[in-house]
Amino acid sequence: MRVTERVVDFINETTLKVVSEEVQHLGKRAILDTLGVTLAGSGEDSIRILLETMGGQQGNSKTSLIGIGLKTDSLSAAMINGTMAHALDFDDVNDSCMGHPSAPVLPAVIALGEETNASGAELLEAFLIGFEVECKLGAALGKTHYAKGWHPTATLGTIGAAAASAKLLGLDKKGIEAALGIAASLASGIRINFGTMTKPLHVGNAARNGVLASLLASRRFTATANIFDHELDFGQVFSEDDMDKNHLIESLGSPWDILSPGVTVKKYPCCNKTHRTLDATLKLALDKGIHPDNIATIVVTIPPGEDVPLIYNKATTPLEGKFSMQFCVASAIVDGKIDFDTFTSKNVARHQVQQLSDKVLVVTDENQAPVVIDSGGHVTVTITMKDGSSMDRRISKATGTPTYPLSDHELNEKFTACASKAI
Image (cartoon, rainbow, N blue to C red; front, side, top):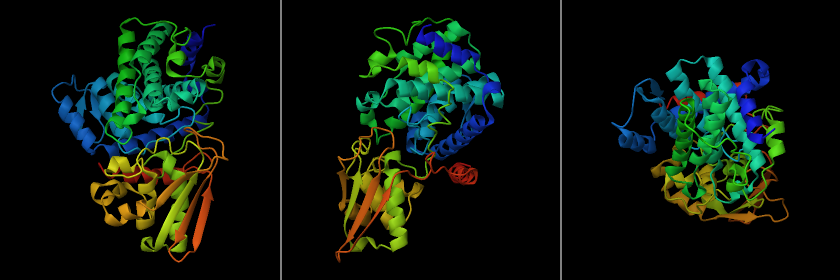
């Protein structure tokens, strides 16, 4: 049986009835978290510009723009809500898909679900299927996809959004096959745009393109029937590894990726690759009562590849700050916390933070195994004071990871904090 056909069968035949209560609960947690960060992102400048640009070009008014109080067509809603979901880089993370699994999928199924009057159970079912296809495809594709410069949240997210949308629309096997084929040609997004408004636009585009692919397929728009079974298939084009097709077809739903390796729910609204370092830095700062003016140097020792997405040594804008280890560490020490206010123009420009960030040195420990987007190995933060004394802290897993997950109560608190920015 062809690989494409097996993937199509999984999308077509899987129902919520065969999904365990534990997986369903994790799906609901992911939905709640993504709704929260979407609400928090609704007031960003990137969303204002997107709304201004798309004004007058939107279609019918059946689907909601989350947190804004307006309605539009499903394609526009998926794009704008998807951009909101990733605007603050506060959305969940998964190692298999090498990025953010929920943000491209949920806005797609919400847009179509609202337009078609789908039930909550139908939305959850479609969301879990899209999430699973996206993540298992990422695991099969290999790490060179990310290393090459692609933004997997955008590329794989397009496929996940298409799978979820096709399920929600009730497409038959031929329709699902076409939707995946169309989506594969719409998949795009490169990492060089990290730290700009275009990074979250990648996610909005992925959500929109997933919806578009499924809507076109529902009207018998044609596409290749062998998107995972050709010498120039998705894996050959997007990866320098040989795509592990056996893993893709054998692992779907066994176990569900949302269960294992699981999902990281972010504690801080910035790049996930800063989070272990921030946990260690904040623990040192709060336990030792460190005053920023007394610090001589801060050395952050990381495994090879940990800093691949952290492309700004010196942050000059809030978005750059989210992808700067130096800025995040300096802010954590100055403020004793990392939250929404950390990433404002005023706080980024502070002399004390900028001066301290210059004292942060990121060092690669070549004795550790390389990481690309996963969280292997450990990081160590060493702070040396001007009097010569020093202190350090080592950490392997950050708060919010599957190893140290946020409780349901803590997740509700995060949701409330996010939602209060818009509601």
